[in-house]
Image 1: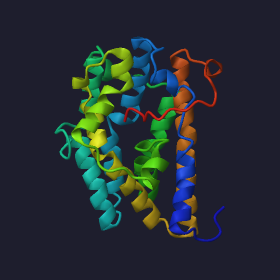
Image 2: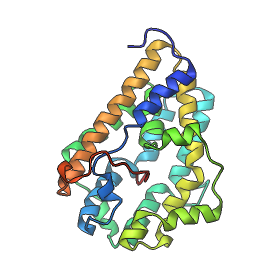
Image 3: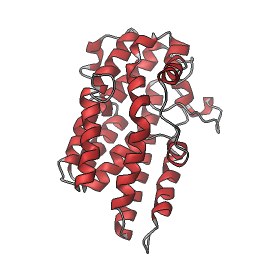
Image 4: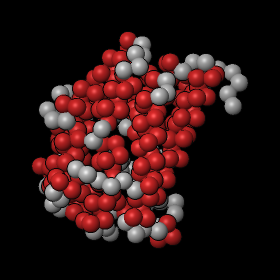
Length: 264
């Protein structure tokens, strides 16, 4: 329980310490070469239906709660990019995700009516509730810090790199696990290019708006609680996908980590 106001850097550190744990034991499988295309399809279908397809809508719900002007501006820019790709490659991120799927050999129709796993349904229901029913600050925490964030947030926030050049972005694309292990053409990875072009700015904006507006102990406690719950629900969600793919935790080398961020 927070009994007195945390200073901004202290509060940010509490948030980063939670994001340090956004790593799932099965992620090495999903970024390696051990899974079949059918197993990968389970993973990608759940990701798409749970949050990729509707992420602009989730953000728009938070914007619709009329946060302060500077927050509205940041959220509006994020929604514009997610829905149109207008700041990067000119196509919406959900559509770019489907382009990546078709590049892997899946049919677009396989992503139209996805049956959610129980843990996926629970996680999506929580994202719906946090974006529709709770204060905008908690919606922004869940969506812009947690869903868009990764285990790499600490590095990106505390040691920001310069914007990547076109060649550096193309090198990231060439090194992508789907290219390296599953033969995906780099032509199908505009989603990765778009993320590389805007992600650093999005990460800094996310922490800026939450840290700047959660100033009272009660607000800070609510944000920390929201982020902690997001992590717990996400881990159960990823457990469900791993089980559906036939993976077991005992098969992993516990303690290994990966720097590859999630598909979104």
